[in-house]
Length: 173
Image (cartoon, rainbow, N blue to C red; front, top):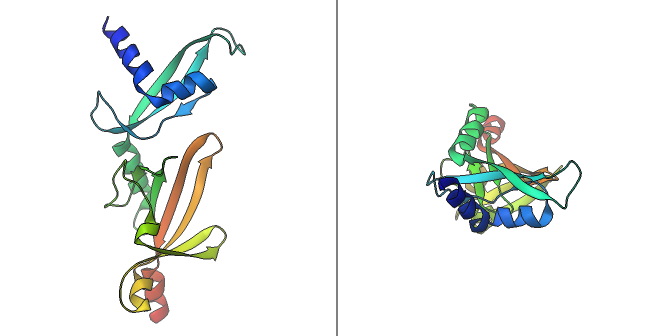
């Protein structure tokens, strides 16, 4: 009885289920607040068919959800002492996970609202904050950023940013 209630809630309450049912392909959800864990999460779902290769008989689905603080911890651990920080963004432009201390899951991530970007080359750009004052101050507070799609079937982007300040300091020595 409890399982039926859970299935009904999951089936009709989430956009990822409608997408799974309509496309009959694996789906990665956008970020949501999990009703059971009461924390930001994402779901990975896979359809189950009645026979191999038969797409008419959708029998059910397998779903796994992950708390986003786990992903943020992975991004933070891999940054190390280099100052390089990574952020995962979902298809809606919301943060999935980030190593940046002031960036939270589900927040819309749009650096262009707070600054400008200048192409450097090779898919990398320099982001500069919209600060008043000398160009040297803006330059020191800027970052080199690379954005990449995670994969063809994964609707997320990975943004990796490195502060310009250490390079600027090295040039000034």
